Amino acid sequence: MQKNFQVFSDSDVIAASFGRGESLSDVSAFARSSNHTLVRMEQEHTANLAIIETNSQTLIANTDALITKQKNILLAIKTADCLPILFSHPSGVIGVIHAGRAGTTQHITEQTLQVLKSKFDIVENLTVWFGPRICADCYQVDKKTDEHFDLVSENLKQVQGVYGDSQTKIIVSEHCTAHHNTQWYSYRTEGKGVQMNWFVIGSLLVSDKKAEPCDPAFY
Image 1 (cartoon, rainbow, N blue to C red):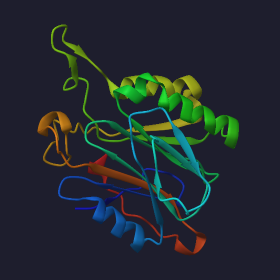
Image 2 (spheres, rainbow, N blue to C red):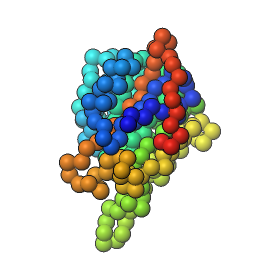
Image 3 (cartoon, rainbow, N blue to C red):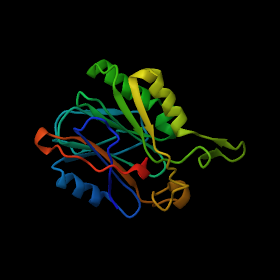
Image 4 (cartoon, rainbow, N blue to C red):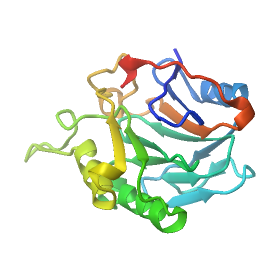
C-alpha cells in the first residue's frame, strides 16, 4: 500500500509514505528501487540535528532532524503519533524533522530551520509538509486537568517564527493517527510494541527524474 506523493513543486524531489501493513523492509526496497541510499535516525526525542554530506553513514545516532543537499540520499523518519515534517527547497536542500512533544518543546523545528537560514542561506521558497500525527483532541497529556497538546499548532508557530507566510508553503495532512488508525499506526491507540509509520524524502539525479503519481487523499 505504498504511496508516492508529489507535494513539493520541485520535480527533483521524491517522497513516499509507509503506513499500516508496511515496515522498514518496504522502505529499504523503495530506496533500492529508486537508486537512493537510505539514511535514518536513532530517534531519541531530542532537538539534535545532523547534516548529511556523504552516504557513508546510514544510521545517525541520537538525532531527530536531518538536512542534506546530496543527491540520491533518501532521508527517513519513523513515527507512531509524533509529527513527521518533511521540507524541500529548489536549491536541492531537503530535510526531515521528528517532532514529538519533547522535541517540540525543545524547539527542534525552529532550530532546524534556523540552520537552513544560517548555513544554507535559504530565506524563501521553502516547502514544508506536516504529515499524519495524533491530533490535539486525541493527545491528552494530563487527565486531571484535561490538558491537550497540539503538535501542528506548536510546530507551525516555530516555522512562522523563522519564515514569514510569503516565504514558505506549508502543507498539513488532515490525517490523525488515532482517528485514521486503520491507515496509520498509533502508540496512544495501540500501546507498547506498536509498529512505526515511515516517511521519506530524497533528491533525484538528473538522469533519474520522472513524474511521481499524486495521491490527493493522502494530504
